[in-house]
Image (cartoon, rainbow, N blue to C red; front, top):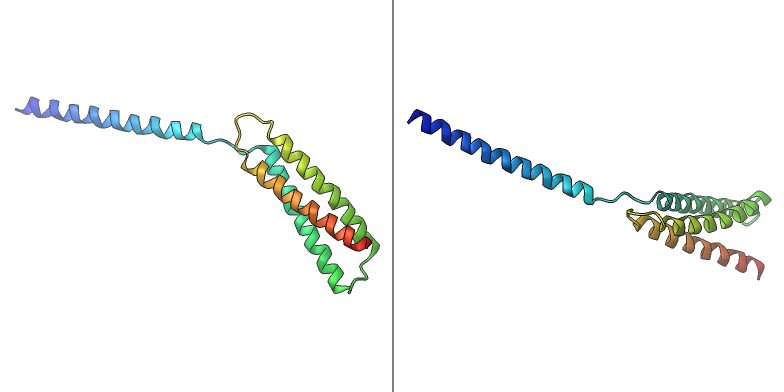
Length: 128
């Protein structure tokens, strides 16, 4: 009986080991399925964030000075206008990276397009 009991224990341990190995394989498989974000997509999102912060800062400065903002604010607006173009181009180039998660590319392109449209609206309204 004693030997039989040990044999059952060994059998249970083998089953547990198989189950644990199966779980480990399963978790490894899930790790492989996770895709990294596209580097250029992340850069595009960072560009959008920086440009948005700059836009807010320029609006605040313009409101504080009651429309008499210094000339360098206009120059900064022009630089950020072209920066949003850079963000759009970077986002589209991020789609060319293989085996990546493209959600950051999509978000970056959309945000930069909205910022570009906002800058264009501000410039056109300023000209009229």
